[in-house]
Image 1: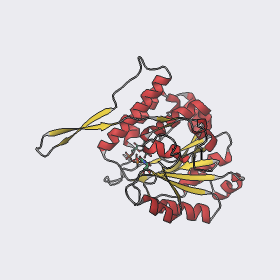
Image 2: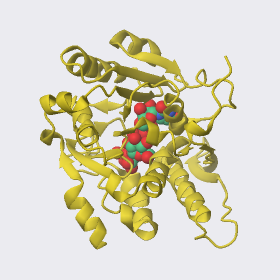
Image 3: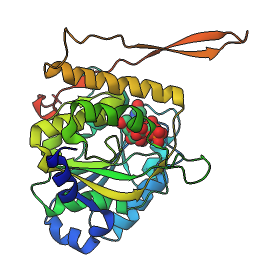
Image 4: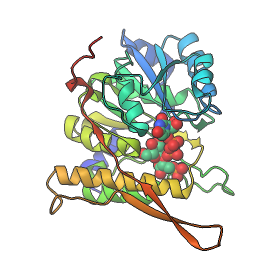
Length: 318
Ligand SMILES: O=c1ccn([C@@H]2O[C@H](COP(=O)(O)OP(=O)(O)O)[C@@H](O)[C@H]2O)c(=O)[nH]1
Ligand SMILES: O=C(O)[C@@H](COP(=O)(O)O)O[C@H]1O[C@H](CO)[C@@H](O)[C@H](O)[C@H]1O
């Protein structure tokens, strides 16, 4: 591990319990806080998360100023459940509808930048099981108390829900793809325990200065781009203890893994570290047994795209 990363790990890692509500309220000093949940078909979990944030951090104390759910083309009643729990709900395709359509989680998060009014924006996945408001207070701690910090990632133990025993085998794409890639090509980011964590927070004006990769490339691209934009010492991480969420199938994580590999390839090409044009196929052929019992190819599309920094866009003509 680089000496710089060792120092960073010691100086820029805190724990959720280090940040009490009183300290945060005193440090807030008029800064607005938005919590954003990207949600695609999360009606089973989004309501409890929104309600927990609303009651503990908006009604009990004036820490969170707005709770936004970006409905990411859900086909269930995510939007209704989120609204009933107290969130302001926006459909990702209806925000900046003047622009060509984009897709995936990264699109949902980028579109939130056009509707969130917070000086600080906290992102929380909408599929969490056993969510605690301490996830939000922990992430806000470094940002509200240290102006030198611009972006904070969560870290936690990640059990593979449903597995037997205490196997902390969650974060499969993190361990098998993202962590090796970061250590190989961006070793200054090797101190992040959970580089793909879906809970993170940043200053709105900083988040609007970097591009957003679509789909599941967004977290890796944000880390790489923010390292370049603000420097390692402006990045931090907070130990939230444990995080459980609903898991995707291994096949679907294969698509996610390919999207993350494309993200790394695109960033390596941009920095001149790839020979040639760095082109690669975006088709991923997986296999399933057909009705005849023989294997049948299942081509999957893993193409990703990139949105420019939100601040670079002309305001929408009304
Ligand atoms: O096109 C998408 C895909 C995912 N998500 C949301 O992004 C978060 C993380 O996605 P997911 O749970 O699929 O990823 P995982 O946690 O399994 O890696 C969840 O709140 C999803 O509802 C989204 O808003 N749009
Ligand atoms: O970290 C991971 O390996 C993946 C999959 O987690 P699991 O193996 O289902 O626990 O989950 C994360 O990755 C996505 C891509 O960056 C994020 O969008 C998710 O929020 C995060 O849960």
